[in-house]
Length: 214
Image (cartoon, rainbow, N blue to C red; front, side, top):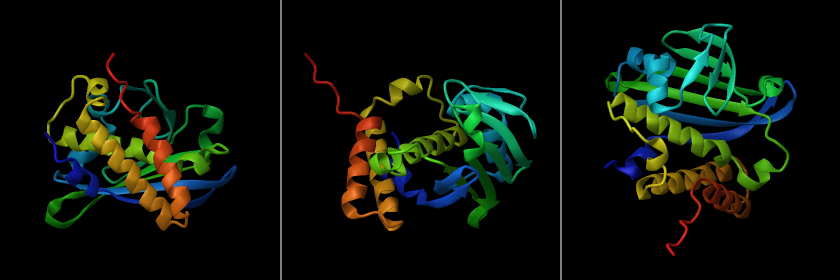
């Protein structure tokens, strides 16, 4: 059983504005360290056989300039690939909007040979979504993704990710992540009232109250 609080505090979260080709966008930024060599982390985030274990199956022309697609999720174009330190891709459900949604991952070596992963997702947010959900709308998803990567690097494999997502352990992590993104939202200038509303909406989306047994 994992230490949920330890996993939550392992991540530093920020949010802020970003000018995109199509207008004003928003960013979510996450940073966490892994007890693994940088080459191992790079392989875990770029090797399709490993990606499917901790994230989702991926297919496509997986090279610089090629296109990728995650099963049931986003796809896009590989813009930059500089092993083992930098990967940048467009990230969108709709190829027509992909220039307004990009993900950049940077790896570096920190203290005690730990690998530091910095992830930034910048995008133009659909009207109304930011005011209702704030950065947690995508931030919680990225927190879950980085947790999955941590498990992969520890050789922990979940055969049924969907089943795990319904466990009390997963619910605790999701709620904690939502609260932490509310704090990041408030630190970026949101009022306490607006940040609280976003946390409540995000939590209801990712971890709705369990249906009582009948």
